[in-house]
Amino acid sequence: MPARIIDGKAIAAALRADAGRDVASLPFQPGLAVVLVGDDPASAVYVRNKHKATVEAGMASFEHRLASSTSEADLLALVAKLNADEKIDGILVQLPLPNHIDATKVLDAIDPAKDVDGFHAVNAGLLASGRSGLVPCTPAGCMRLIASLGQNIAGKHAVIVGRSNIVGKPMAHLLLAADCTVTVAHSKTANLAELCRSADILVAAVGRPEMIKGDWIKPGAIVIDVGINRVPTPDGKGRLVGDVDYAAALPVAGAITPVPGGVGPMTIACLLANTLAAAKARRP
Ligand code: NDP
Image (cartoon, rainbow, N blue to C red; front, side, top):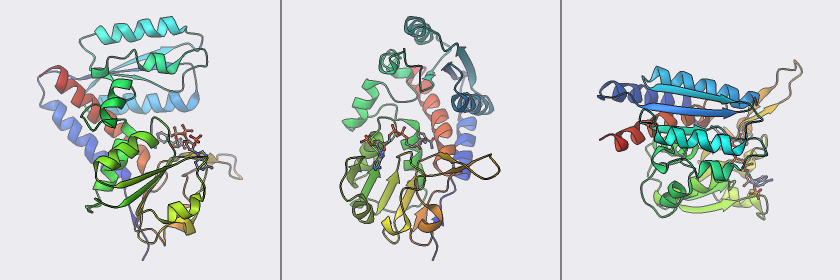
């Protein structure tokens, strides 16, 4: 039997609608500030989509577009201003930042209570120690996709391929908190195919097109494909694929997220959920 396809688009739409209803019931309007430095085309698309979703949910969206030549000091001054602005509940600095700016320094300058990306060291520490804080949006979205299957995942072996601070590591903490037995793999991991075959839940967050083959997947496994990779096509437009060979995985997995339409839409929906949570915590 082919895998159940996890419809991230529909699940994200429901979450966004919930956020919109919640916003409408509040006595104030939550505000999200998004800062974009430079003109990376992919970042510009993400920022545009975030703005659109924020406004659709009834929140106030404040966009700050800065030239790629902006100094670190000027960016830090903007973050300080946004931290102090009462209208703003969430601050997101779009990554990547230009090379002359220390991204860690900027992320750690954001007020942790407004850190809706969940990348601040305080929020990362809270997650790692099993306490509540703002959780990074992409892994939070992956957990919602897994939860949508309604399966008991306690005791399951989860393998995460990728150990970045924005996906792999927070995903490991979330799955651990859900009582999975977690293995985190990376570029130095030996026998990766064999390790993946032992996974009841396989999360791919690598950034390598279709690296994970059909015969790396345990029959019936839940496969969450975080990867977004553009590969060339004869018409020159290119197409998006994940880190998993989807066609080969489909007949083997128990459930799988497509690319596009799986994890991607969840990231923005969880950003709205985080902004709402930050607003409620700040303005009780
Ligand atoms: P990073 O480049 O920060 O991390 C990639 C990870 O993959 C690293 O830990 C790296 O290992 C590991 N890796 C690289 N090559 C191999 C290999 N051959 N075998 C095993 N592990 C390997 O990427 P991100 O975590 O930021 O993103 C991962 C993917 O997810 C990308 O395609 C990105 O576009 C996508 N993404 C999608 C989002 C969404 O909204 N759907 C949001 C964020 C990311 P090492 O640490 O040893 O170098």
